[in-house]
Amino acid sequence: MPPRPIPIVDLAAEYALVREKIRASFDGILDSMRLVLGPNVQAFEEEFARYLGARHGVGVGSGTDAILLALRACGVGPGDEVVTTPFTFFATTAAIVQAGAKPVYADVEPDTGLVDPADVRRRVTPKTKALLPVHLFGQSADLDPLLALCRERRIPLVEDAAQAHGATYRGRRLGAIGDAGAFSFYPTKNLAAYGEGGFVATNDDRVATTLRLLRNHGQSVRYEHQIVGYNARLDEFQAAVLRAKLPLLESGNRRRREIAAAYRRLLRPPVRPLLEREYGEGVHHLFVARVPDREAVCARLQEEGIGFGVNYAVPSHLQPAVKHLGHRPGDFPNAEALAREVVSLPCHPFMTDEDVERVARVVAG
Ligand SMILES: Cc1ncc(COP(=O)(O)O)c(C=O)c1O
Image (cartoon, rainbow, N blue to C red; front, side, top):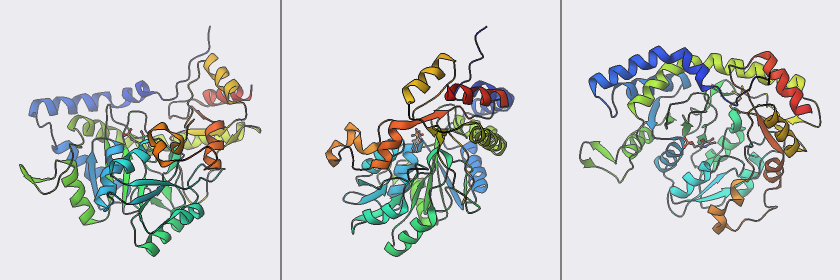
């Protein structure tokens, strides 16, 4: 018999836990026909903001919308520069460009893949209007030096927490630490919708007011448009899914940590898992390791029916979409080295200990 497949995520196993709740909520929405910015969005905004320890939460259409709206609500616009990382999903860069601003990259730390605060400082210019660190793979960027830099320059810090639901930095949940924090609920995320969804957390009343306008065509009341906004609302059905799944987030993250700890015990050089920093608790959205012979490792995983990913093979500064920025290979050597070597292994709450051992054996070859 072929070995049991181990998927990179197991959405069906999770659905089995929330099926009844979600179906009942969907019936309620359909019976009431309150489809847009209704009670589920409002309740979820309160529940997730409370979980994060943020004063406000604003549900939006996607993680990309969340970053774009957060940047705009923090005053970023045409002519501004935003310092960020090239080693992330491209949406981080796309949102900066969509806001009319220029992405300015700082290299990452080679052992974590997180943006290097010392290099961020070197990249700041008089045009820098915001910093946009990414809490990559569920681990916090080192926020204290970045927050100090923001205070010095009087510029906002926007957190890309799209992969970091529930992760902490010095005891505080990510997304509620900077001026605004952006989350994605793309179906594979630790807290995920069954479609598109996003969220911005903030402790700033003015930023929250602007976010609410921006996501809903700039309307304060119906047909009264204070600013030119977007159609970027969180959907009632997705909010109902998220409300059903939020109570599972902590236990899911705990199990992911156990799995990550097991991988760290089992994987041996030359396989090098990205390091965890002691300043916070990660949530292992992905478990990522550097491997010198990636092609061979991926071929073995494929053969064994084990899901894997490569996050990310091409760093943002070398993407065709931003060739106008004029970057070349070699500009950000740490990001480029990681892009050549990383592989993401299954790390979801429904894996057994035996699954983890099998993945580690296959990676070792
Ligand atoms: C780091 C990061 N930023 C932004 C996004 C964009 O989120 P979305 O796909 O919901 O637009 C994602 C994920 O998809 C992401 O991983």
